[in-house]
Length: 496
Image (cartoon, rainbow, N blue to C red; front, side, top):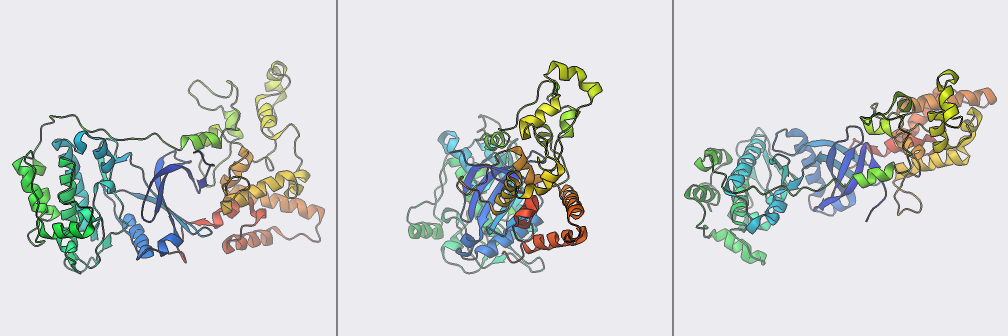
């Protein structure tokens, strides 16, 4: 079911991609670069109810900021909503995951050459994080993402351990992860264990699942499952080649001291040989972007200009760009340039030159392109500076102020607590630049001083009071677009 448009910072949100123990994941679009991302949304009150929840989230952010590898998912941004106590982790977008591909594959398994292709990348990613002192502890197909070009990405470091770089060994003290992928020492209840060997066991179970479509140990009862894992008794499938069977046996060894490391597995003959592509690959289970319906709803009230404003390549003419707005990050997106407008209360309607537009006025009923565009967006009457100055108490000013409050608080009347822009004039409030806002406030203050010089405050005092109000985090309607930035920050102080 389609919901209202939601914009946090510079990200336009789409539909939900999945759920996890800590929160949900939604698709998002950067309105500046037009790049897709996956945003992990977590509520602080839900994290507090999970054992080591806040510590795990804090550690995951620390780990993802530290790691930089082609086969490890990348963290692009972290936003904190202090009013709603929400965390937004903006992650690299991937088209599918290994678990969905296995479900869509024939007999729920991959061809051997494709499984080898993914395994080599998984070993590279695991060897890198181990070299950085990171133990994943939850390697499984659902945490292995696949991008276009069959590029593997290791993700979800929510239960990962970050070891001290100046200590020897990889000893861990807290067990976590999915039951089917637990190692024998964890199933037996060990309090201390080698983190590298635990990840190697999970890699062996993942490879088993890729080439057979099943698990070496599986039982609906957790106690019986841990009993079978602790005994480490399994039967190797006969259709696997001897080199692959030897590789799996080195990973699924009961004694962790005799179990291979990731660096040993990278030198294994099965990983270094070139397999024949005797079967077609399992294609990615890619989904269409879910942001486009929200993007269309965002600009559904924007009338397209006539053919004179857009050339054959789809670019907007300079006259149309002249009335476009700039975003709060100091950049102008091609999408925003083509379908955006200035605020109705602060921008005068563009006037056409009599000499240049005389023929157009005659042929188009006496109105130029920009004049007709202005009238279609904001009405035929032109607001005077006095009306704009006093518009804070009028309907236009109240609409803009209420729109800013809705953005800051995430609320909105009559729409399920979500704010949806009724016009592009309201939408522009959330993206107006601070420089333009400062000039606008100075202009209003100067006009107010001319009418009431005895009671008006100076521009410096007004700006100082506005800055103090933003720092204090109050969502005041008079601050309009600026109030949104007071609740969405990148500062985790007093949050986690």
